[in-house]
Image 1 (cartoon, rainbow, N blue to C red):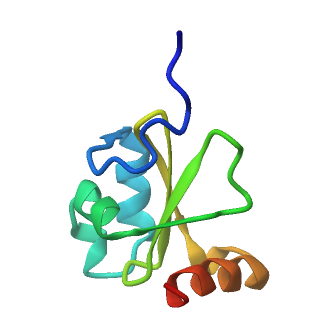
Image 2 (cartoon, helix red, strand yellow; image 1 turned 120 degrees about the vertical axis):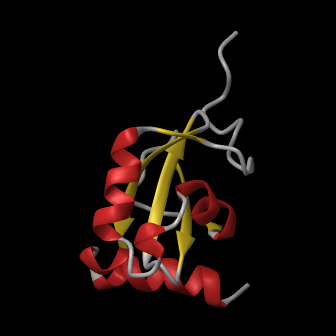
Length: 99
């Protein structure tokens, strides 16, 4: 039986694909663009991210200004929140500020 795509959603130890590491370097705000991606993941807050597909889960790191997308225990990519529509930015920010 295959693992659920969300089985690793709350795990702090995520595997990293090279693409995600490259995207962190290109998209995160300094000084976070030089940080360890796993450390950014652990510091980030789990959020609902509407553009993500059902099997994908997300965390938002406000200092770095990025949303990290993962599935099956792998961090797949890093999104610059400023590159998203205002409605998406507001939706993500509101989840973090209301906690």
